[in-house]
Length: 296
Image (cartoon, rainbow, N blue to C red; front, side, top):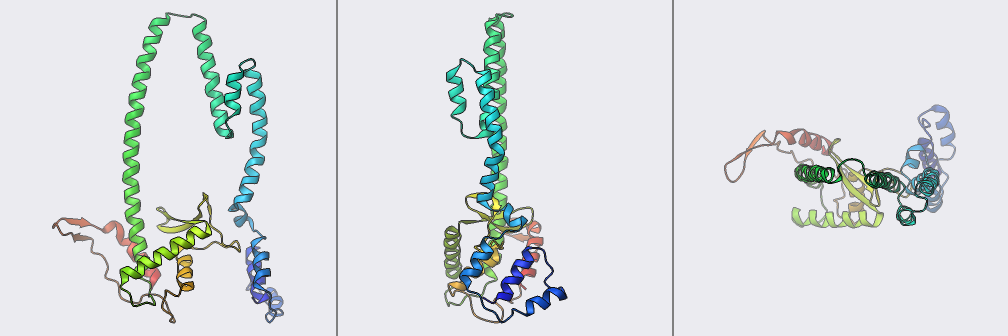
């Protein structure tokens, strides 16, 4: 690797304008100097800017543990104080490893103990209170069941819609590729998808469709809250990642442009399926136009 390129990569991560004349003057002096890929990769993979540091799994674990250690100490002290003499309850709470879950369980346990104490005090008519509480609990349980069913139905519908659009976007991407083999389009796409899925698995990455942006994103498979970064801490789009994999496997045609220049026929706002029923496809028009624009 040319040292000048490595220098520019590091400068961009540091927020330096590489088009500045003073920077160019320095960069020009090392344009003919070579540095091994091994050294370049090691340097880039171990230097972080603010954004790449936010996406680092090891750093996230370190600072999360650091933040929660103090909370754990306070929780354990509170458990000892409030549950003094109640070893079973103390052991139950201490066995919970997650700090947020332990805090929630402590609050619930305190409420249970207060309820037991109130009943032990013998206030009011226990039998009537018990029946009233049973009726309330029954109504609450029925409401929660109906609520859960309703929310589940909404979630299923949303997932179906998301899957439909995601599949549609994926087909647009693959239809714009020019393959090197003479197989039919369906076979080429099947092989391409298998190669890409294998590479994602090996890299510990996962493709996620962002419904808000209308684009695929690469996330860490073990923590979807973090973006996937390559071995040099660079973020990559799914499209670039996929094309890189297919190029390495010599599945794409070698030409000045690997984009499909075949004119695309835009979807009509209303189309008719095999049963004669008109389907409103206007919801996909914007996505189609964006995809065609990207490919051309």
